[in-house]
Amino acid sequence: MDPVRNPYAPGAGQRPPELAGRDTELSAFDVVLERIAHGRPERSLVLTGLRGVGKTVLLNQLRSAAISRGWGTGKIEARPEQSLRRPVSSALHMALRELGPRHRDQGSMEEVLGVVKAFAQRVSPADAKVRDRWQPGIDVPAATGRADSGDMEIDLVELLSDAAGVAADIGSGIALFIDEMQDVQPDDVSAICAACHELSQQGAPLIVVGAGLPHLPAVLSASKSYSERLFRYLRIDRLEREAADRALIAPAEREGVEFAQGALDALYEAADGYPYFVQAYGKVTWDVAASSPITAADVAMAAPVAETELAVGFFGSRYDRATPAEREYMHAMAELGGPGGAAVATSEVAVSLGRKPASLSPARDSLIKKGLVYSAERGQIAFTVPHFGRYLLRHPD
Image 1: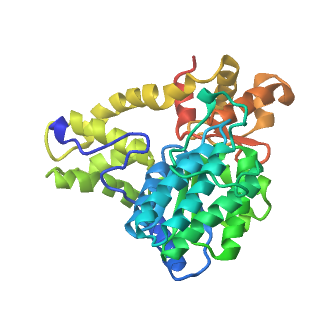
Image 2: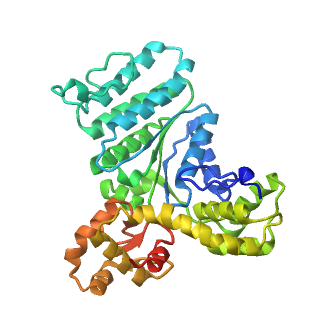
Image 3: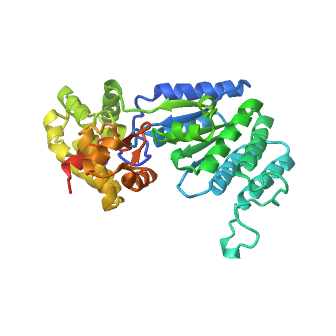
């Protein structure tokens, strides 16, 4: 098969050639946009799921849907130990620039941009060195007395309210997309919840769409008790068989290539329905196959190559970030959870390693911060990466 025509795209956040199995989520977002366009109150959205299920791809697709309706949009990726002031300022600046040409009162636009600038610059103390000052690239004076108190919760509520007012003036909306939302700092999480709460009560046309690991709802709930009612939570999981087959068949058909049924059976068993793995195995199988239709024998030949690539790029890169103590902890999890990577009790991990639970807390907490494991529920721990347990069992070193 011609590798140049290979349609499959395994990549971090890279849109697959066929976005299969996400019609429900896309339709739900269309309803949100339509309701807000008609002045109806609506909740912000939160997408949760393991790594490799396509949360970032879906987040980007939702952003495209908002843009197609004339909304102003901005997207950020949260990082541990980083305040949201600068990223949010840049994202909102982008959203306002998209809406700006349609706003008749440029004076009002400049006032809101001044608020964005004030919010952004509040992160730098007055005595900071010149080289440490950050300029948001907004050519208007920073506002005074608005979104510049230094209290993140107060400032974000004022900032988003003012931005929503601009969108309301032209009958549009603003959507702020936050990827890796579980990494937002606790004070900033509280501020986001408070801002969404205020905007919801106002019926303002601004929503936050977040994406993160499965424990993100618990992170939000720990910040504000009302977050359970504040967001609409959508769990993004692996693809059903029909959707996984479509993700393979549709791109191939556009290139005049077919799959034998046995090949589809083998690919689904190998990928287990996870979108990233579907693309990874599909890409290697295409390159290995001599001609159409692609057969089960082609998949059998390609599988070891795909697994080697995943072991290095998908699993190995994450494993390498762990310390020896953290690796020991994860290997114990894998032994207890089996190839399926089931959640295990932290107490069982301690027993397996012959240690007291308290002595293992630093390793566990560090793994959570690195995004390698998450607390599935109280006293339970699980891998954030599908099939990671299987990888560890195959690579005991």
